[in-house]
Amino acid sequence: MRRRAFSLLTVVFAVLMFGCDHATKVAASTSLAEHGPVSIVGDAVVLRYVRNDDVAFSLMHVFGIGPTQWSPIFLAVAAGLAMTILGLAWWRMRRGERSRLVDVGFAMAFAGALGNVVDRVTHGYVVDFIHVKRWPVFNVADILVVIGMGLAILGQRARKKAPE
Image (cartoon, rainbow, N blue to C red):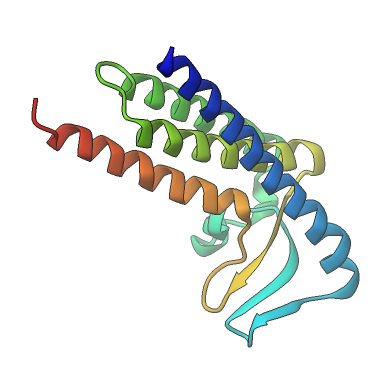
């Protein structure tokens, strides 16, 4: 029973994280797009509205691949494939003794990935709005993916090191 309760809480957590990502993107789209950037910590952290037709962290641009060479549909399909691989990796890691940290990490990563896929499918681009100096503009979904995968890796390593 405890496993099911935790699984349900994990799903609820993922839905809430997806909602948080969506709400912040709506706020950025309405407020920042209209009124311009907002400085949080001088010019080190600025909230600014950006339509990202690139992949995460503008990697296509970094590698000199123009975003016009990839259609939003192709990027959405690629992201959907990545989400499928993420789900399969999570399912595989769940065999044997379960790690709650792995489950929470994958829930966060999945919620973030889904948030960006929904943007791509509905708008043709992803709404980014957090700009840290010397770093590409990103969003809550990107944070969820990075932290979620970090937690999943930590949880998997801790599970492997645990005495049997």
